[in-house]
Length: 289
Image: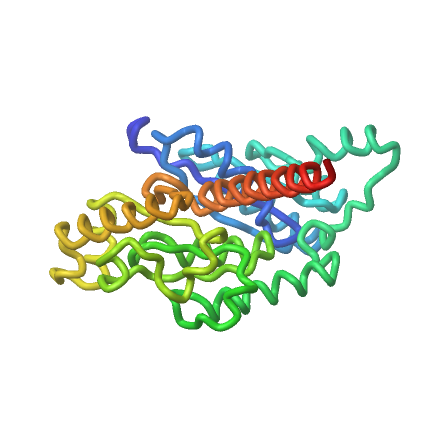
C-alpha cells in the first residue's frame, strides 16, 4: 500500500461516553485533510480488566501495517494506567491537562468518569430536555403554537440545514428553537411569513449554494422540479431578498458545520442583547435629564 493510500486506524477511548475524546481528537485530525482515517470509539471502559482487553486489541492493530492513533479521556486513574501500557501511541487528554487544573485550583479532582457527561445540574438538564421537546414540536413549521417562547427562529428554503442546527442549539445550549420552511408562496414577496412576522428580532436566515441545494434535494426527490438548479436558484435568490428586506442575520450553511452555524447565532444573539441593553440605558439616561 502506497503512502497516499494508507488508512490510519484511530481509536477514541473513554470510561464514559467517548464524546470528549471524539471531539478533541477529531479537532486534531481535521488538520490533516489529506490523510484517511478509520475511526472507532470504545466507550464505557468499565475497569482494569476491560482496559486490559482494549490494550490487547490495540497491540494487535499496532503490530499491523499501519500504526494506529489512540485518543483517551478516561478519568479513572487505574483504567488510564492500564491503557497507557499499549504499544500504540496514546494521547491522554485527561492526564495532559488535569494535573495543571489541579495545580491552579489547589486541590485534587475527584476523577470520576460519570462527572464528564453525567446529568449534573438537574435543573439545567431538565431545561435542555424541555428545549428539545419544543424544538421537535416546532420543526419544519409543524407547529406555530407558543412561538413567543422561541429564543431563535430559523428561516430557510427546504434542505438548507434548519433541522440539525435547531436540534444542536436545543440539546447543546438549551435554546427553544423553531424553524420555518420558506415555500413558494412565502417567497413571492418580501414580507415575513405571517406566523413569524412579529418575531423578526429572533429570526435568522440560512442559505446555501445552488449546487449543494440541488444535490441534496436530488437525493430526496431525483429529477424533480423541486431539485432542479433553476428552482433552487430562484428560492435562494428570493430568500436572500426577504432576509435583506428585514435586515435579518444570514448564515451560509454550505461550508459551515452545525457547530459553526450555532456559534455564529450565539454571537449574534449576544451582540443583539448588548445593543438592546445599551439602548435601554440610553433611554433611561435621556429621560432622567
